[in-house]
Image 1 (cartoon, rainbow, N blue to C red):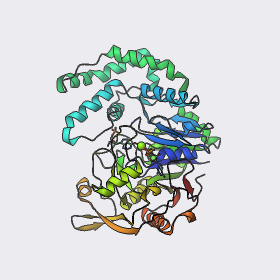
Image 2: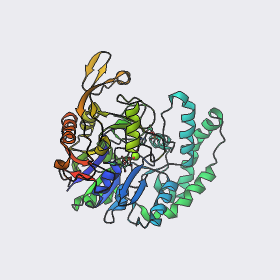
Image 3: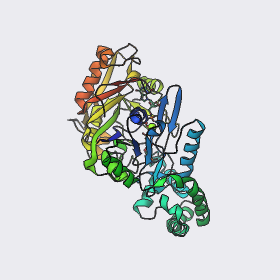
Image 4: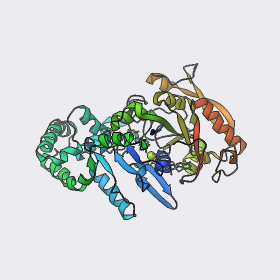
Length: 427
Ligand code: GDP
Ligand code: IMO
Ligand code: MG
């Protein structure tokens, strides 16, 4: 039975939340497998708008069990306030499952994220400041705190001591900050233990048993392919693997179980934070995309950088994720342009290059080679089928599909659940 992965094919904010929510009613489990509350997923249901950071977007579908997998980093205070915010709006969150092996974003890791960014100055990554990088660093350095540690005070204290040993030296001697007291951190973390206890379990076992029982499991990525620590535009990336393989390690499900990998692809491109972005626009078109597309960060409130569609990136996403489908979002935002440029290749130091260069130097030099596609002026937000779209919008979608290397199986024409054209069923 199907295990599907749904992930960002660009630099994040492609509309993963909406796409996940759309499928939420037809799947049994929705699982976050990496990242943390650096994510900001907007879901619009009727006249209600929800901003989710840590919770899987399936939380809004009553029949669906939301799961926070072992690969996620969890800030307990953010999680609890997200849960109570939803409860106040009448959303039942009691089915949530949290992996005992997920790592905890501690207060000192939020501090370290902020001070390191400040010290990087001009070279900063532009992180969300949520402690994501330092928490994954602790995990890899084997000084991380896991959710299960909240239930053994002695182990928790030893681990916090180990983690703060070096960090306090760094904070006081290098960054000129005050040392953080072990007891204070332990006390704060223990304060979350009872509140989280009803949700904590062995999610790997639950998910594998569910798959054996022919349940449908959807893995929802945070961030996007080009923000992947291995396959993204390093070092301007996040500290986890949003790409498809991350679903296996971040949820404990074998690759043989995954039947479909859906790349969420915006009809143009955006990026938040620093790093190269070949099709970025600094003119009125960029401003118009930002305004019409509402391109402002859900997590940090930062304006998103905007640019034209980049087919080189889309092809790359198809390759590194083994995409079986694309879900093209925000086509409606492009209504009104007479002509729409699409980047089909790069020019790097005078040479035409069709595929994403592996070298950071080359990528920094990449200039977009554009093909002009005819635009449309008709309102497409009410379109229900592909044939409802104006001819030029159809041609735009077809052209993107041909360039990107996987079929476009759904098209978003508005933020709402039902503002979607379904071409091939995902299930
Ligand atoms: P995510 O991080 O990938 O979940 O994406 P975000 O939620 O950060 O950003 C996507 C934004 O676009 C949200 O405000 C969505 O409500 C909105 N959105 C998603 N799909 C569409 C679409 O097809 N058309 C329009 N106009 N807005 C969309
Ligand atoms: P969703 O899930 C867009 C970016 C940050 C920064 C870099 C590293 O909503 O698509 P981090 O705090 O992760 O260490 O920051 O990654 N970034 C995102 N950009 N959408 C996101 O999530 C992002 N999560 C992180 O802006 O450039
Ligand atoms: Mg987002």
